[in-house]
Structures are given as C-alpha cells and as structure tokens.
Amino acid sequence: MSVFTLCVKDSFSAAHRLTDYHGKCEALHGHNFQVEAFVKGRQPENGGMVIDFTVLKGRLRQVLDVLDHKFINEIPFFRERAGSSEYIAMYVFHELRKLMTETTVSLAEVRVWESDTAWVAYGE
Image 1 (cartoon, rainbow, N blue to C red):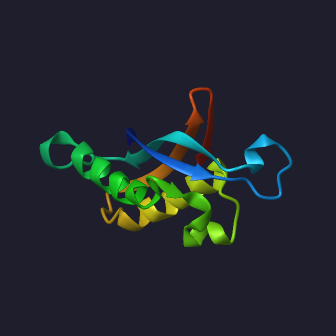
Image 2: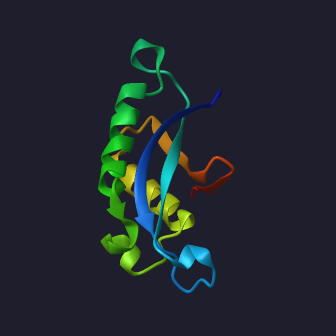
C-alpha cells in the first residue's frame, strides 16, 4: 500500500542562550526559526486528501505560538534541558503529536532550521 508524506512549514522568532556551552552562542541571541512538520498517511480521505493542509498548518501554528517572540530558556520544557535547536525540534514534535488526533495520519518528523544552512530533525 502506498504511503503519502505531507509537509507544512511555518516560522517563529525567539531568543535563547546555550548553557554548558563555551562559545559565542552562550550569550543571549535570537533566530528566525523555520519549522517543517512531516506527516505520513496511507489513504486519502475526504476530498482525496490524507489531511487538509489548513488543519495541519493550524496545529503547527498553535505549537509555535507558545515559542514565538519568547525567551526559549524560560519556557517550562526548556528549564530542564538546553534551549538548543535539537530540543526545540523535540518540543515541537511532542506538542504537535498531542494535537494529531486523526487515526489516518502519523507525525513522522519535525525539522527546525535555525539558519538558512543549519537544521535539525527529530522523529520517533
């Protein structure tokens, strides 16, 4: 059976500082993060879609609104771990997966771009 992969992209701006790191990124600084969310599904449903892009974009936006224009290190999830792009990807993945209630799709991967040339992916 065929598997479809869908992706939506959004962005947020936030500040963070890397702790236990010895370099210039240890100082407070910010990024315009780009986030891609990939979902997989087997059978198109209503209207020939695995999931409506509008629905998927809305859910990703819900998650990113918590991070947008914030100091990442002050968000509860990041008080116990670094405010790195790796953990941002993990956070977005887990929060978005909570919102994925359809049984026909599964969240496969989240990519977080902290610049035009550097990204991290997280999936389970």
